[in-house]
Image (cartoon, rainbow, N blue to C red; front, side):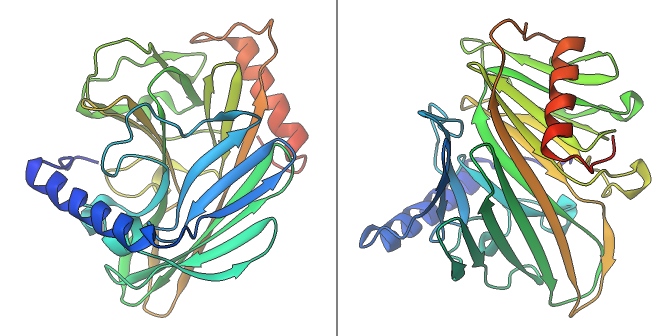
Length: 306
């Protein structure tokens, strides 16, 4: 995507939205908490139906050091960004969602219509290492091109990586110190490094994006997208580093399609969390790390094709 991130004026508007949302929810904490064994998630229907916590044991992978006004948790946007420019559509990103279903291990929340579409999210904790986030876009107008887009903020340290079509990799904003090795995109990050804004997009070849930090592995598994199916100006894998706050966005997208009014688009992302072996060296280009991830995916999804 080539559009600007928020300037001061937009930041003020987002800050006001966050303040109003926080004020609306202060009277009662409606946070939905889902858990099984070591895995726990928190879903906030009052703030964009956003996943605000992702715990594995005693560690929350979404706990960024400085969350800022709106730069926290896992959210959802329509793709391509040309559908809304900036800021994101508030009904999808920050406004309250209605809780339409809930039990011990699963919850569904639904937005109001905004930008010609309504978003539903169903978050299900499958077991102590796996959760599924299912999204549905219901169109209230015709979209010549539309895709689903999941954006998850994590601390800007550790290592993000994914197998990619190497000639698809593009820096579309700022600077990104990524590396290409073993047909994969690698983004190593140091916790005390100066903050530099950057955005890189790519076409993934196996339908997964990984993040390794503090001995933990966080995997997003999603349906593979052919290069010709990517939304205009986007990638099915995108990484964004803020130049102002210490967070990284792990972003994945669905294939783009035409959607007519009254039609819907369904898309799911599976999240896997598991500890990394102590003797596994975590560094860019590691064939052992790639092999470990692929083995875990095979164990978690035996019918998934590479």
